[in-house]
Length: 366
Image (cartoon, rainbow, N blue to C red):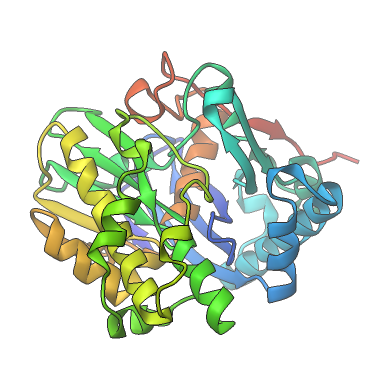
């Protein structure tokens, strides 16, 4: 547990994150007053079994048995909550809020639409803890992108670090938080693909759910012509803030490549998309702190280091937990929602004004 300092009105919150990679649930404990990060507690991960991942993929865009999958998803999150509390030696009464992201199955902010499944009321009943969920809908309804939502947490963590710096999360998609030298000088946007395209490529051709440590991509050769085609997507000409759906990019250009070459080209695409984002930033970061599963992919990390200015290193280099960071962020955001503090800004999601989203479900009292 990392202590940051005392605060009279700080509370323990539990964050839950199931990202666009759809590989499992991350859960983490955080002590905060909604502004400063006072302590980080234990964290855990529960991987989804292959059959459930197939069921999740089956309800993307609202197709299939959404309600049944939502109930199962919520039950799995309740199991993770119990597991983490046991690990921490804490009772539900010690936790003020659960920040429940749910699973994104549709995200089209240009059409004022975003959908994260997950039953907050059911989770509150199962956990006996107040649950805050549906973080994105209000932002999107008011004209924002609804993503990314972790930047305010990144800024809170980075208060004592030299800036400008960038916190780069490489999950199913990749997103970056640029943090400047001024108070709350934050810019954020989705850069492009993260692990999702590589995961889908490898799963389809090898049966493995992902390219472990980037070993397959490291054996392959980047097809520069195909990479250039991938980078022609109009998304890269849009200004920030901007966000992506998991399946935005067309994978057909790599279809005829050998397995290793396809993995290498897609890893290079992830890094090149981040590089494209440099033109949006007010100043180049002197440091890139990388979180998410992509930091374990040697091919992605090597490509990022080759393409980006400044140092590129996993967040563990400064003592952060890259596996828990997104879950911690939703614990932090839950406290901000409960206290009426903004969870998104014009510079992070493009929402017209600072906005606090979220729905609050208290557990039954009987």
